[in-house]
Image 1 (cartoon, rainbow, N blue to C red):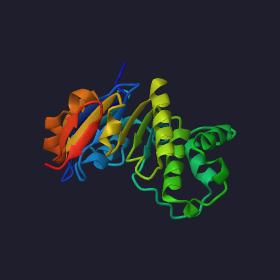
Image 2 (spheres, rainbow, N blue to C red):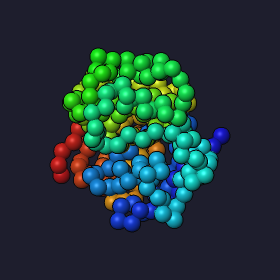
Image 3 (cartoon, helix red, strand yellow):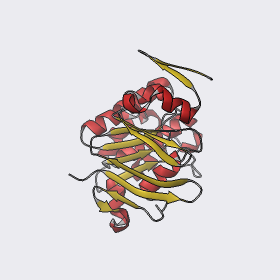
Image 4 (cartoon, rainbow, N blue to C red):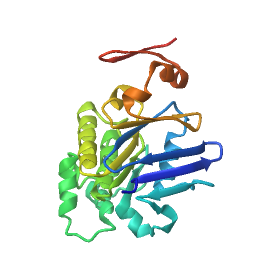
Length: 239
């Protein structure tokens, strides 16, 4: 079985250099690193929004350049870091955009609105929502695609604790069903519940693997500049 996502030698001048990464189906992976380390750039390369330069991106073993645009919408979905909307489309119409590559009667959209606690907001313009509500709309749109590969840039940053937990549970359900999720985050405590953690530092891939193996005190000091004591919980202090 091919990896769900393979990135080989991806380089975006001034942003990331020679990054290679492979994610298998069924993996929920967290992308961590300091601000400006290249997390967002790597996600955009993985989604096809940025060229990998001399490198290569493959979805399920197929070179991204060979996948037609409409088919890309069925295979992968990307959620940006900031939820900006220029026009006052309704919440339902934005979530329904996730079904553009499908032909259905709208039932899937209604189910998605319910899963993301958006039913009561379905007819409200997205320009009249809070930041957290707008973020949930983008995540709901990505979920509505039913794409096996999900790429989310800091999806939890604007969410309250309840909805952040709900998004994690939905992500876990997606990967347990055979999908793959790569998302960036800053809360390292949360990273310990994931299948895999990917660490970016100064535009390069510093480490990737199981959280307990990767997030060592030595790496946390080198990459984040904090001293960490790992016991039953994780505490931080400036050196």
